[in-house]
Length: 88
Image 1 (cartoon, rainbow, N blue to C red):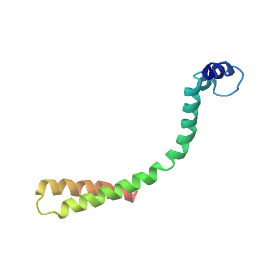
Image 2: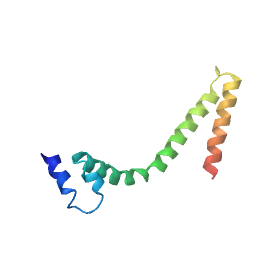
Image 3: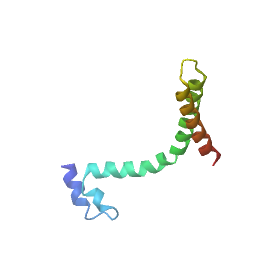
Image 4: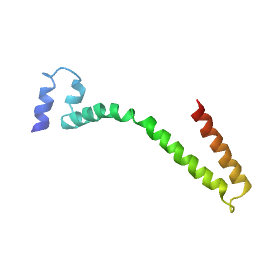
């Protein structure tokens, strides 16, 4: 009943009518699209935190005695890539 009303109101309401024709699903999608703009602004902060955690885990891996030299070299290379990205 409500979805039929919303679909019929799509002809009257100006704006992104493609979302209104889908009824409640379109309205929820529109809300998520509006909300996503706020979320995208926080992604760079999360990326910085993940890089910090990755650096800490790689440093821990390098400091262990039971890790082979090849693995330590790969960890050092990964650390160098992260640090090069941080310098930019």
